[in-house]
Length: 164
Image (tube, rainbow, N blue to C red):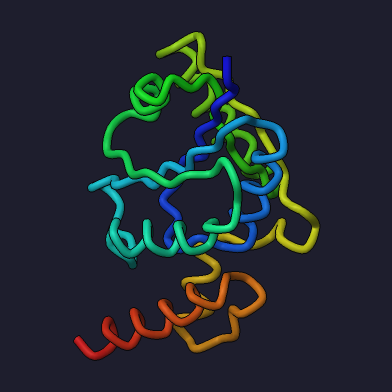
């Protein structure tokens, strides 16, 4: 039986920290599915198609890694994909309480779903999508936080937002 892991998130946008975790997970699991959340309760900067495109471009070279979107409960998506594992990143102790709560809720809904916590490398541990959005909004240099294509997409998206 193949070990399939789901790495869920909004990925608004995908960062080098996310990519770092995907690369680590790809060494552990037979298949990693990056699950881009299309949550209507959030107001992402990029629409689902843009986020999927950026994620696909960022992981195109990684074997056994695919990208899909979902708009329902994570445990439902995990079941549909016949996976057992959910990958979550922990950057700091402050992430743990929230992530532990999510993992516990997922396990309560489906006792077969195991959450695996991974930490990014030291060079990426502080990077978050919200930090990248904030810095890029004010034209700060995010080139060491995101892939080049994402950096360009941020410039273009903020130009559109600011022109409205």
